[in-house]
Amino acid sequence: MKKHGDAITYDAIFDMHHLHRCIKEALRLHPPLAMLLRKSHKNFSVTTRKGDKYDIPKGHIIAASPILSNRVPHIYTNPDSYNPERFCPGREEDRLAGPFSLVSFGGGKHTCLGETFAYLEIKTIWSYLIRNFELELITPFPETEYNEIVWSPKGKVMVRYKRRKLVIE
Image (cartoon, rainbow, N blue to C red; front, side, top):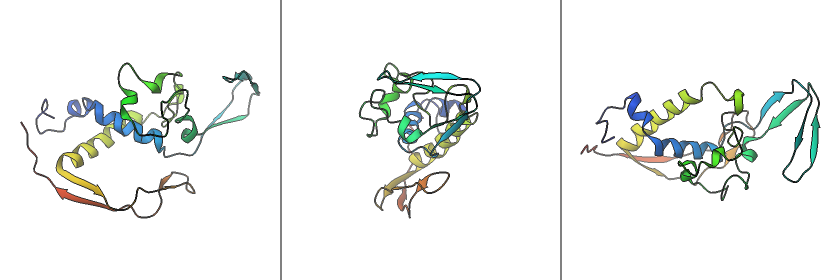
């Protein structure tokens, strides 16, 4: 924010690379959807890393689970740990296996059209909260409620907050 002053502008939000990686990593570990479904428009085959081959007939439904896909160990180093640096330039684990390495917003040509807007909204909210409040989680880290269409935290999530004085240098 030193570069942009106190104004949360589009340019300031665009320059929040670390916050972007933090949000991306949170979505990798806790995607909101259980499954992504697509219909096969032609016959094709898939060969796994182990050499197993599967034929996918035209018209069949193909399912991908972000919670599993986003934690594949040959793509993500320590896949169950939170590490936003995995998305830094030069490392970019989310690109190791092509456009389907990270599927929190879908993948390839079917990536969610609202992804850029979603990051803009989330970064706007978090940049305001982080700059203006000290936040402390006072309940245990929540488990995920998997019985819903859109996954969310299970039970109450309580946060203590205290307004901080914003200092711009």
